[in-house]
Amino acid sequence: MPTAFELVRQGSLRLPETPCILVDAKTAKANIRRVQSAVDACGCKLRPHIKTHKMPYFASLQLAAGASGITCAKVSEAEVMAQGGADDIFIAYPMIGGFRIQRALELQKKLRRLILAVDSLEGAAALNDAAQKAGLTVEVRLEIDTGAKRTGVPREHYLELGKRVAAFSHLRLTGIYTFKSLILNGQPTEDNEAAAREEARLMSEMAGCLRQAGVPVEEISAGSTPTGLQVAKTGLVTEVRPGTYIFGDWMLTRERCARLEDIAVRLYATVVSTPAADYAVIDGGTKTFPMDVPLGPYPGYAIPTGPAGLPEENLQLRRMNEEHGILTAVNGSTGLRVGQVLELIPIHVCTAVNMQNSVFVWEDGALRRMPVAARGMLV
Image 1 (cartoon, rainbow, N blue to C red):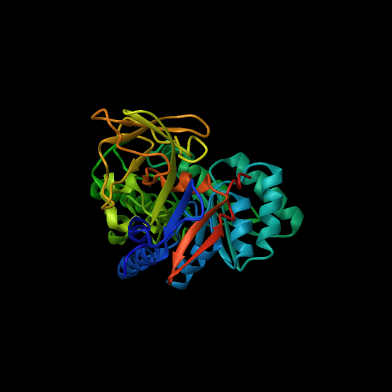
Image 2: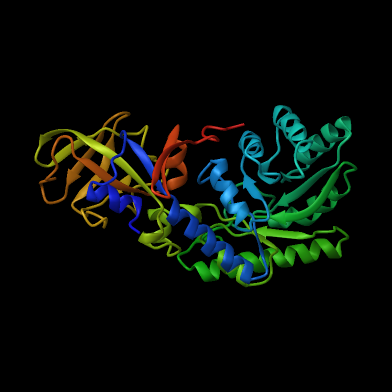
């Protein structure tokens, strides 16, 4: 059975409009099954991050395949997923701000399980006070920085903070978590295996120290897509939280954790102008193609493909305005014509999806428009 992208290239599937994103559901489902099966075989739980798809439909597919729950970054995302049927949600982001805490406490009343995150004494104290006033006890996890230098308590302070969080009357500290990805000894690395082993070892050791100090840590959560399966294979963690694996993107191929055929998403744009032989203008610019990944490691903001679906190395998308994408030609001639529809592979699919109000999904021989329900959920 040909993919949606092959059908578009053959001319047997026509997209209603561009610029747009097309999802091949069969490929996405295969990715879900593959990762779920691999993590299950390790005796580990999979709690996928919904940041990649932001759509309750795909979360439901992940849960039906065996995911233990889902991960969100913000309360507003979690509210959307709860409305879509998810009832076991981890919000892996510091719960700071009264407005955010109150919404989380209201959400907790509607769910079977809600896990919140803390990485500071101030944040834990504010959450405990609000929970006490609401007559609730809140399950929390302590975030620990293992090298990404993002959120998370530094490793030299985790033990003290863990003991103090565990002492709060209306917080129930049940686990620790981290985001580390491809960091090894505090520096970026291309060695997925070594980064994963370090991640698992650090988290297991810290969980052991917390338990020895009387903190009843039950769950150890780690592992993004680049390291998730390798972390699970160590047997040292109880849960991994990959997100991008469901759709895949060009970044994952560079990180050696996805093949081209695993990428379930393509961007499409139409050539609207060909003012000169060496460049052409498409109908998608900075409102369509994300710019959150630096150009250094990549030839452009998306990867144009040729007739066979392979990267077209002559074309580069390196310049954009809001509504204009300028494709230039390495050899001096784009060969493009006005009205031609181009297929492009996203560099970072999570931000690409978040820029769309809706995407087109090809599933079981039918094309449907699906709203990106958690798009722009920032709170």
